[in-house]
Length: 348
Image (cartoon, rainbow, N blue to C red; front, side, top):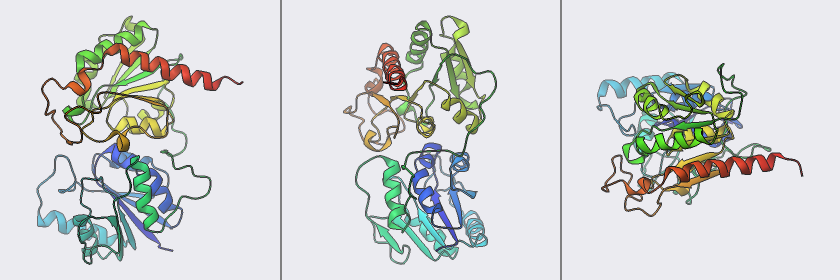
């Protein structure tokens, strides 16, 4: 049994969250698990069961806005990894990323056994070279890599996304069932227009739903704009920049539903067991990246011309994959999801 295993996933919050089942599988068979995460994924890593430590590094071949490659930075990271005395590593990557540069870094730090997916010849960089897992939800694809490394989920673990324990919710949440609207995304190509979000919020509050509009501090202007559409005003709360990630997870766990684009909070909601209405731009495949393991409604033209382009800025004039979704459709999807959940909660 390995004493200390590192699991690397060096991109964003949602990318780290979907690795949760794979990390639990590793943790079930070892003494200590360290996650190597990027700055935008580190807080999510700290929420995951089975994680003992988190190393943070802004990786120049993974980050969406990558830093320069410098000898000083690489040498410092190699030294940090070497000091951690890692016995084995499992490198987890999305389908469009290469694990080999990370494997090279780990080899130079003295890591003895490395597992990763690679279509390219890895030479001595990998000990277990995994074929690309079959198409399917990203958590299952990451779990397949852990399984190839020799790690399996323990009996009783259903393989769903999860976070640690019970997170305390911030004070002052609505007493009545409420909906969270999260309008921000990391990439413009995945964004529903702000004026449409305003109409969604107006529709939800008109139906009587209390609505919290969430987002990061950088998204505070957007959340304020969207929240201003609530009718009546007492049914809407602008929570832009208010919650840290554990608090957002706790709030999501108490919500009736989340309305969101293809971005990290969709996976955080799934980890909390909360239904999701996903305005999903098909620049990445929904088969892999739609919310997993919870009731969900996927909206957006999955056959639009931007399909599978991985574009950060929409390559199609008018952004038709999402602008064709009417706000009333979004409101109806919330009603449908929450009604179905209520029906399941009523004993037969």
